[in-house]
Length: 455
Ligand code: FHN
Image 1 (cartoon, protein in one colour):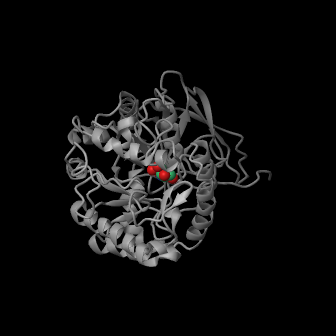
Image 2 (spheres, helix red, strand yellow; image 1 turned 90 degrees about the vertical axis):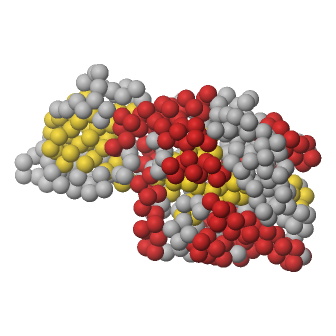
Image 3 (tube, protein in one colour; image 1 turned 45 degrees about the horizontal axis):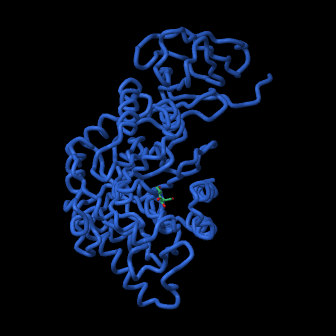
């Protein structure tokens, strides 16, 4: 379900890494089949993540200088490596205000944020002692952008995530470089590969010590196997330094949760925990020529759909090279935040909703399953139907306005155990600007009839 979409993603984005996509599918299917993490053993540490529902993804890097594809632009030979790295000279962060970033993320309603510490181009966004290819030593920014942001986020009780690319196409000991040329093959020169492993694992150790991420968002695991990455050891390095750290599912089977990308699950993913990562337009980084922005309505319907299917949304922004954030990204986060202020009860700290077929739209449940939340997409008025509900309804209100709604039970046959249809009357004027949330309070934990009807 996930990986074919990644292939189409790459092709759609001209990231013609077709071969890597094939390898990706094989390795990913392998890794998924062999997830090495026992869900029961991580249930407690995952609770904040399960309750959080919304995170903000931040792709910041030298690729914002020219506003081009992050790392892929040189890998796919849209620009030479030399010209790509000339962007180091234009990366200033002169308008970078981590307090403002943290305020905006707080206002969006997000409970966590994930920022790129290093993308596939190998440039670290902090003062790495392991490599001089970092924004402190190699750009006019001359400052670490991770420490002040994590401090500002933690002041606002927002969890901090570190995106880290296992791929490092700039490192001379890394096999991969351009789409059609590699430096060497691991099996031909394992000593060189060991040098690279020691290098990237040292960076993971320093990020763990310096910033103590609450969440690690690995990427690029598809280029090598769990054995080659020493994925089990990487997991141990992190958990030894921070036993409650959460690791995403891009560590060749040694992660805690799954990360579908850009494409939207139709049926409920069979994962204990999952997170849909998504761009606000078509690109992860700042790309001024990309004006294909999603609307707040589209983001909110995708968000409620993901949550109703037991997942989180990690919504991406791509700040500029001076650290300022585009008006379009700001507008989306503020509109999403205003909606969360009106309807957050139906999202945060809830659990996945009732199975499809009982209501034509996303739903969620309170943790004790005694409150059912129904999401009405678009400007729905008139009446909406709930099928198979065996509970008695205590009350129905519209979140955001508190308006109480009436309802009728239709077609209930006294001697039959099959429940009637609940028609909820939604008058004009109570609708939310984007998605309306109805709160249905029940007489106990939800009980559903999902039979085929009849006598
Ligand atoms: O190659 C990266 C891409 O540049 C971007 O960082 C996304 C974000 O999830 N991950 C990879 C593509 O799957």
